[in-house]
Length: 473
Image 1: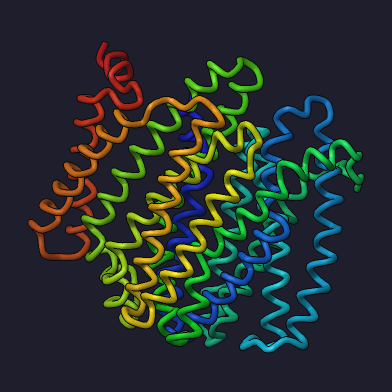
Image 2: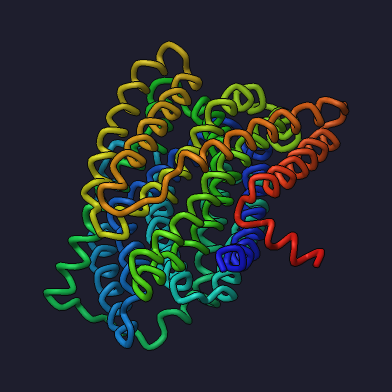
């Protein structure tokens, strides 16, 4: 069932993910490093607004809708009322900061960033609802239209010299049209209804600690861009952002596809069949997340140099190549932590553990950034990110079993590590056999895929032997 749902969300997320990947390629060629740096700082600020004010509502929908029964409309109405209230407060505060604060953003650019923050949060709530209600088709259509419109509008404006504003306006157009055509269907018949006292207590007890966690995670994943901008300038921020985004978007898309398919299955197993069934499903999720994380990052490392030559603009290439060996493993660890080792904290609604781990990790990240960036520049920020995610992943793996029984991961880690080493070496050797960029990428991916397929059968990963026997029976 996990593989089938993963296939649904591969279709739903894969196309839009490819379009987002194309957007990164296009904007790294049409924007200067300074313009891309300004755009990156704006996106970081938008992300901060989202995590501080709204992302906990997305988690509330994901956690409480599957168990709402006949009260699905009531749950939606409660969350809608909370969203409208928070949007009003955020809008007032942000407008005051944009108009009267000391910032590099022009008022128009700042207002555009505020609108994007609100639309992004609204769309993520809609997607969370579609996911838990298994509305695969609608989910894919919304994402596809949003990404396509964002790319087309942003591309056209950037080509005509609109600078950092171009991708921002493209994103806003994508959010608007996707919501008007597909997203609005999720909220039909829903009216504002402030949650009852007990419901508000449940939502707050589960969700508000997550707001702190998300803010701390933002510190880990995005604050380095603001620190680099302050210390080294927006041009360096632009180069760092391209390298970071290239790794995160590639691996992050894979993690998101698996998690979007797997998490609702885990919740259903827990609510309908009990703890034992949930532990079994958790093991399946973990095997897939950990294995894919390690194998994908090994493949990406093997082909990173020709991939950067093909995809990234000339101004960015040398800096991006310097960052990839550090950012790729950091992205892999971030995915394993968020989409596997953190799950027990969500299942038992013990989000205070997440806050503690994120606080420690954010502190380490910021301290290392201020120590390493002045000495090593962008590479120092990448090292800080790698160390921070390593600490975070270890801490989650250590404390998660105290909240919920977790299957052992030692065997999974051993098998995955062997696969990753074989896949990485095989991909690197294969791509080194040819000279041209495209053949290098093709040979690296093809060799990695073949080697992974062989090891999957050998180790019986994902119970693949049963599928092979059925195929040839």
